[in-house]
Image 1 (cartoon, rainbow, N blue to C red):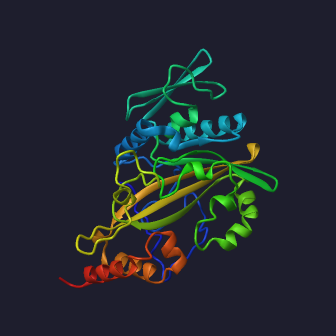
Image 2 (cartoon, helix red, strand yellow):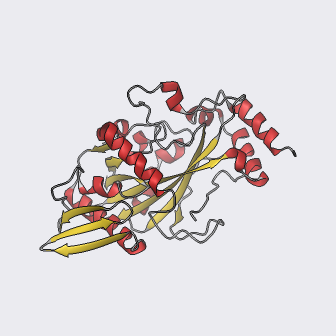
Image 3 (cartoon, rainbow, N blue to C red):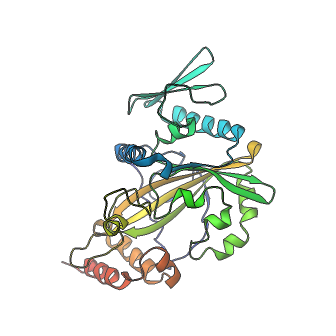
Length: 317
């Protein structure tokens, strides 16, 4: 069973880095020890990534100023994590200087060489693309050099209302410019990145509300899809449907190549199924959310009907 996370369970809504070391006990089960989390919902993530690939992978996978040594180190890390933590699903063989990793969940085999270069034949664009397609998580790589940093690669098939094309090649402060409440962090983020670069993995969470549990909310809908229906942020009190979208994010530093691997793993919680304690916490979080955050999360116009609906849910039947 996969864990459930409740980052909104605070007295008042706040925006903060909230970084915890991997292995922290979040009070909802065994401590987190794995960067990648593979569970019973794996097929949902796999189907979503295949759909993105079929639509147009360039919408979801972008690269700029990639560095070969960085990619080699990070893809080796990803493969090692899968082989070590999920030997029942992933196996690797080595022969004549090449390696093959087989995913038992999909029957797919990835071939690559000692330099972490993808070997033909393959429909993937790179080894990073191939590995990202084997895990539920979305992936991003940050290069950090002295006082300069930039997003060098991103594989994002579960975007939460933002597009990879808008972020690739930009520094941390510019990538996070639209995020409400992060002004102080954007002004002093360099020390945080340098601390993360020292190595190890950290975990943080972000959350929001949506009217569906679809993973892909790229701002540009696929061809032929109604944009309003695609957005998933139009709460209808007459036909209420509401989900908490929780993102478990990890950041792993690689000091030898001055880079960070950032992962995003999405979970959904249907609001009507929350117990009274969690429902009360969510109600308080939305009620105390600053106006700028309401706008950023797409909740400004629906805040009042959402709170009214949650209050009705909390009443005894």
